[in-house]
Amino acid sequence: MINDFAKQVIETEQDELIQSLKYEDHDSTVNTKTKNEGGADKNKQEQCKEKKDTKTTQIIKLMLDSCELFHDKNKRGYATIKKDNHHETYTLRSKAFRHAVQELMWRVYNEGIGGQILQDAIGTLEGHANYAGECNPVFVRRAEHNGQIYLDLGNDRHEVVEISPDGWTIRKDQNSVKFRRPSGMTALPYPIEGGNIEKLKKYVNLANADDFLR
Image 1 (cartoon, rainbow, N blue to C red):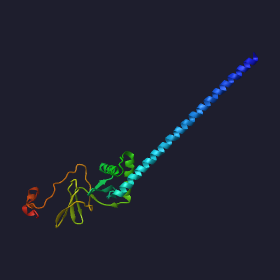
Image 2 (tube, helix red, strand yellow; image 1 turned 45 degrees about the vertical axis):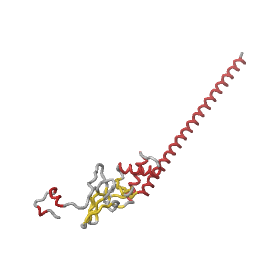
Image 3 (tube, rainbow, N blue to C red; image 1 turned 135 degrees about the vertical axis):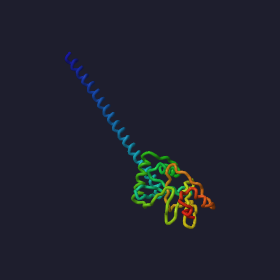
Image 4 (cartoon, one colour; image 1 turned 180 degrees about the vertical axis):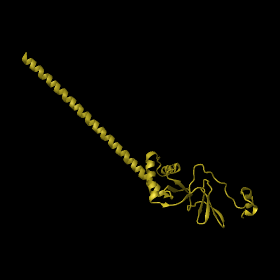
């Protein structure tokens, strides 16, 4: 009986030992799997960051090659982009500039961009504008430069009227004066030669007719 009892105890201990080893193997497998999954997630995050950094660098290079970056006296960053047959000037933080970047990326790489990638790129471009670009004044609608007056017609062709003591002419691709266009800015009537300056009298508040200079 004692031998049978001893045999039973030994067999029970063996079974418990086997079960314990199985659990240890299972825990080891789970821990290894969890560790591998954690490593995979980390690698995935690193790949996403690398892809994001590459895309941001791609945007910055494209814009540095495609536009003129500068700032005004208040350290506000601007970009002038050659588009079709004219130049357009934007503040770097404007929605219009973001759209211009997105359009250029699509035309060159057939890729859409947005979100934090675009914001990071614009932040770097702003640094270029403020610390590597020139300081230029930016005007809305009207400007004076080198003794001449410039008037932005506000049309789709971005034409500007250049007015001098000798007369006026329409510049189709001027870039000596930087004009920006606020949202809602409308086009002026297209100027034509001829007409009579006397017709302006009724729009001018003068004390007497002699104050009207021709």
